[in-house]
Amino acid sequence: MVNRQMKVTIITPLFPLKSISPYSYHLTEALSHYLNFECITFSRTTLSFFYHDGERDTTFQPPSLKNINQRVKINIHNPLSWMKAGLYASGDIIHLQHWKTSATAMYCIIVPILKLRGKKIIFSIHNITPHIPGKYFVFLDRLLNRFVFRFADSFIVHNQRNKKRFEELYHINHRPISIVAIGSHEPLVKNKLSQIEARRRLSIPLDKKVILHFGYIWGYKGVHNLLYALEIIAKEIPNILLILAGTVTSDWKHYEEIIGKKNLHPYIQLYLHYIPESEVDVYFSAADLVVLPYIPPFDTHGDVGALTVALQKPLLVSDIGGLPEYVRNKDAIVHPGDIKELAQKTILILNDQNLLCSLAEDSKNIAADLTWNEIAKKTIMVYEQTMSKI
Image 1 (spheres, rainbow, N blue to C red):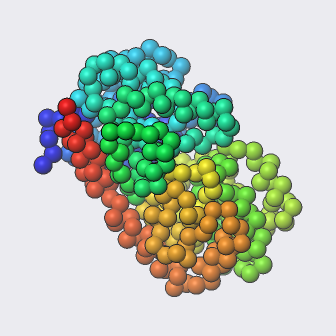
Image 2: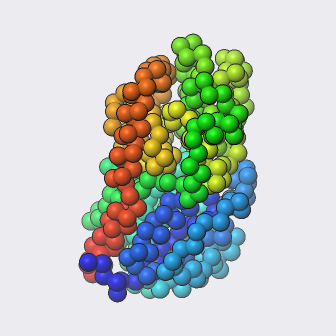
């Protein structure tokens, strides 16, 4: 039985901001069926030069959320808004989403104020280590984390590997670390397209074998390895087509050199921009197989994996972070950075219609186990356990 007297404030980005807003929307919407709570959101989280195509998705207006009181908008350019968030949060429990270094910098002001006011602090840790490489940036990220984490009463991570890595890095003692998975990220805009219609919209012939790599293109996404594997795949499957869809956050010139050197242009369609919520389903509907060949330092859960299973698509992943939790067949898991194995298993799956169907069925079943209603219930259990520790 949920304690409806428990007051909760969630500090998180929501639409129209990009980043983890789909996760935040699904979580807050599911929690709203059980709790009346307030949600403190952000208007800006990142300095402009970190986003090539802007931080906001102005093309999408999500369905309204019930039982949510948005009192403050935190802006990275306005330290006064950071202080207001700490002073105005009314919950007994403050649940903060931890996903990027710039947000952590703001939390360095917000969280101590909350603690001085006697609030219980819970962090949901989305990225154990930052996406941006560089030893100085990693040092800064870890320094800020060590400061804000000392104020936390408990933590939420998304899989067992995350928990182990988190414990290794931060030596969290005598404070609980709960595992609450990511729910299956079904798009809020459902186009319900057939493969025929999706391919028509993208001008893809029906006889193509289509693999999709979706999402922000960071170095750790392993796109360079996928391009090298594509050269091998094309020799066995001449009608192969790779869709790369998402914003480029690293130097694209490196990838363009591989494409040119390996003569891969006939086998690739590029959509190198942010894909709005309203268009997500088009790319997945057009694909036969989604491939996520991530490599170190990736060590988190993989939102694209959650999206793939929600859309019931066959999925091939690297054995890294939480990605293996989105598949049930070892033929759909490869060692990170193993180009030959990546090519061989992609060929194996695409040439076996029964295996493709089996992987799609696995995705459907995994999504059924990752409903946001269950995620909400487990999150509320963390709230109740945290409140019980006075």
